[in-house]
Image (cartoon, rainbow, N blue to C red):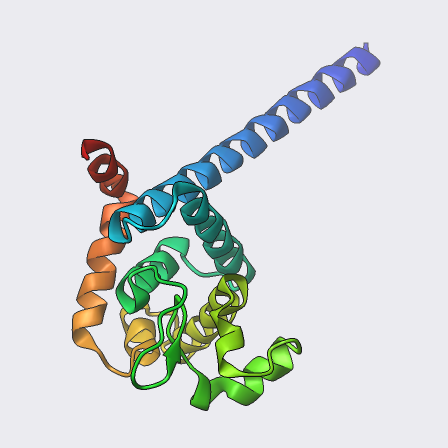
Length: 182
């Protein structure tokens, strides 16, 4: 009798575990799709498969540095308009507009294959390092999102408002709805 009860408990535990894993995977897929849809809408020349690849990198970087993937995606939207080759007049590079002159030594240490500024145009490198920088800004701001964005953007209040609006759009699924209307 004890053996049967133990088997039932094990079975219920296993089923519960699988359901939790399925729910987590579904949530991750949904976030990835919401981000990819937003990226395509913001940058119409971006192909859907590239947008999804970028979204996967965003999700990975957000998980690695324990940040909100929607915050990272919103920063990308407003920093570079989802243009991986964006270079500003001030020397900011890539999707997350990383300032090479400020971060060169740390980038070279974290990514030994990076030798020159244009190397940080690589999407994976750019998003990972940009998210690491953002994570440091969040820590300095005591994990206050507004404060973290202000630190990341050198005090740009307008960017804070835009990022929050875009995050709400992503969380409410309206980025996806807007994409479907076209």
